[in-house]
Length: 412
Image (cartoon, rainbow, N blue to C red; front, side, top):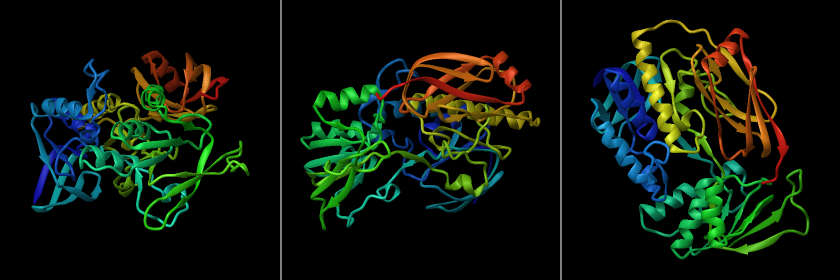
């Protein structure tokens, strides 16, 4: 079956929903493609609070946030294709399969909103005989919140990312003993509020500069060996100890889901793991936009929605005003682990999202000739800096700018 739309959005999570709605509000014909049986992405299994504080000015659970967004989407003319998996795409053309057969879409603009996936045991080189009882934190979350099953009776969590911290609390509330959270870095990986509410409030130890060296068990996890690491990341002899457990949860980071992006040969940023985007959220291929976790991992779904709305708006503007753009780069300097957008194209206000390479107190950021006092920055929490039109114009006139962070080193 053949279809033609002004804008085709790939991915029905919060980014895809917002991008499709935004494009439809601009009067475009819009298709939203989702490989699962329902829209919402990861939100339906995130039953904890903490969503919507910026967007709706109230604290919601993941399902509540999804319901709000889907209610808004239903007011617009968006054609939704569920159980539809994209198998190939080229600029302006998308091939997909669904229970109805092969589908072929012609699109004026394409918006990539496929989200992210979790790193697995293989990604971190975890040594074990692959017994049962090893889960990513997201898989365990779905098991508990959607399927109504517990992954085990005593758990060790590897990595202090937010999903792992939230699952430490969730498992504790369900009666599972969480022995500890093991973090390889010398500082926590999750947001401060999650460390306090999910670990401190439940007396769950957070072991910084520690690693799991071995997983014990043949058919089922029986224990793990952990050890303290030195400054070079090597295990310190004599610090090894065996911790009994029957399940191991991995909260070791998310990876932008970019297999489809690679089919388009987009310019990719190894720092973010996603495509290089300009301030319109347009990629290196004309007419292809990207938003949400497929670009870079976001802290809040509110930020994803805001970014996706911009992508939807600009995808439609391109169709109506297809002028060429000449961009200049924003480059990473000292103290910066990642940033986006990586390209500036016009003198208008823009929000630059930065992640610090290490914790800093009394931090200061410089972007081109502009400087900003940030107080404390942490790698776990993105820094959002709003540049004025005049500040962007200075960077454009200089044919680019460098982003730097400096401050007092902190171990927290």
